[in-house]
Length: 330
Image (cartoon, rainbow, N blue to C red; front, side, top):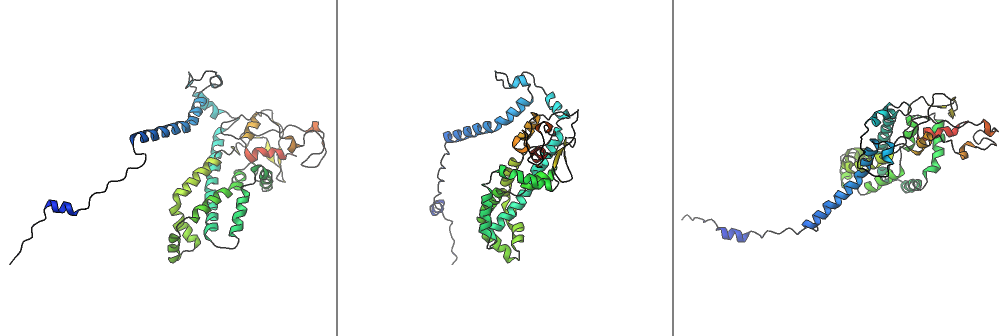
């Protein structure tokens, strides 16, 4: 005899299903907590945007508006001609200076990402005897002040005939011990299972690095690129126009060209380094480097009276190593 199966009642189905679990309330999910969080974000955003507001305000103001005792949100009259005057000033050549700064920052950032990432991966993953001593040696370089290595770096650049060139500023800082340290610490925590799978497929250390590690580390590379670019964009604008008063002799030493009647001292431009500001103020080179005050010249060992020494003329649009090249004058 055929039997029929009756469908289960809705009450039976409801009893058989497990009760739905309530999600635990997240800490700080209440309305007052969310309001406080957004207020904190708004205050932080205002603080971060404040420097940009000051840049725009001062760029469209006169000197009297900037130094006025009473503060106004914006000056009574916006002087848009300040921007056109800045780019039309032949003594500054701000357009070429901005291009040089962009080239220096981008190339140095790309170079540091390339060299430091490979160095950090080698220290973290490739086992060899001298990995730890080399890592400690790199850490020691972080303790050396930049002022100690400035003069030796300039001497090397001068011997390579790279004074007043872009490569003279880019190449000496293509490697960074701090960036290498960050990459090494990141690669130590990178999943080894992905690299082992790459080695099963026949890849070595180089292949695993470029095909597995780098594609899966995009966020960290982007963070390091932002940090590095922010540091390098403050490098003084260098290798500006080629019409300055600084030249290099046959031995690679920086010398001054004859004085020109039409030369104007460089002006201080926002974003430039201290050497450019010193150039705009008409400062002479330091006495410790020039041997000012008579006696024997500290560079060539030749006795010359103090009256025969002329003040160093700084070239407009040059900064960093190029601007300090004048300290090597004979």
